Length: 603
Image (cartoon, rainbow, N blue to C red):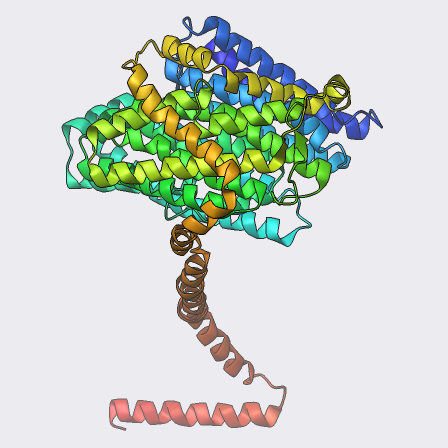
């Protein structure tokens, strides 16, 4: 069964290629939605297999490197956490595929093929990454994620900003991947294994400086992929890609891949205090800075992008406190409401051709289908009970305040306040609150079905907080400490109060928070630093390497043939076709030989 499931996920991109070849050669004028139909069917089958056979699945091992005494297999483990992550990926991906079939309906045949191909490679890579049980296979599919995101962000290749954004995302994450690779190599030479079980056991028993350095290298790779501070610059720029891709990247795939990797390596994190503290405080700082900056942003997708960075920081906080199940819980719940909000953002941008929140003001009515679902998404984003986004956040807050000191607690509270403010800003600017009017309610479903079906499904998952929490706990067979009524009220009452307060005093709050926002700008708007480093270090170093290659390396290699060519050119002049020249040269040689012989024999 394991092999069959992996085969299903693997063949999806190849089915897209096959459909494209059939479409080009045999069947003309085919409906372009066919590029999405077959992948949807196969992924649905895969999802069904996971849901119905989760307790019967084991592991699968593929021999990858077998040279002399070196044997490195690729292993895929179907344990509860890996299966749950794969289920989340497939659920969100199916919604994105259905949504995309309408979103890019105006594009031509080739662009449909390109979009669906890279999207399916991206999804399949994330499923394989979720199931991987060793560092090497994780690294391989990690690289596939980065490569596909490069092509998908640059999908609108007529836009120079999209191309620039994709290049920035690609090279910044490649920089982190180099550190990841170095850490992987160091760990392998120490443990002689790539499996997570063996690596965690090895790191736990030998927490020396080399292993600490290897862990730091892997953490740098994770921070670049998760776009945590100071690598936050690439993710908001990735908004230049199609909105469904943003929904996938920012919810359940690429940017949370690092969180999943930390979760798999969590048994050994506590043995490296510096790494553990770095995870905690980088997550805390990113959560604060990006929550503040999200309130400043006016671009709808940019607000959601900085919100994603802030929430990934929330996921890292419990991982830095040795509470990995809480971090994974927030990853799980965040996937639903964040992908929902991005898909609604795409709907609004397509419908009104506008990204600005100010210009989208009152574009949705509260009692329209999209308006209701958007309200659920914003309330879940703020963490209002009993929506899906509230449960994981409440556990993280209580766990953090019970363990950490005064200053970190204040930072977390400020981050939560600004999360409420930008969530309220999103809702009350876009939504128009008016009397109940259901006259066009069902007409909207008929006209925009391929948009509304996936966002309705995600809206239901974002609404049913009790169900989503129970499913998570039962699937992993774990439990959390119960939250008391007093704890719940002490968290929820301030959140609801701040959320509603922003509706009445939005302008005054902007004035009050302006100084804090200006400070956050100094830390967030650091793209010029990366540009300066790129020009002064990488470009200059590249120029030096080019000069060294042309003048030193090529010079050493070209010197012998240059000498031989010049010598042969000189001797070619001996044979010039003039008899007098031959005679004079012959006489000179005879005289020279006689003189040599005379000197040698004293004649």
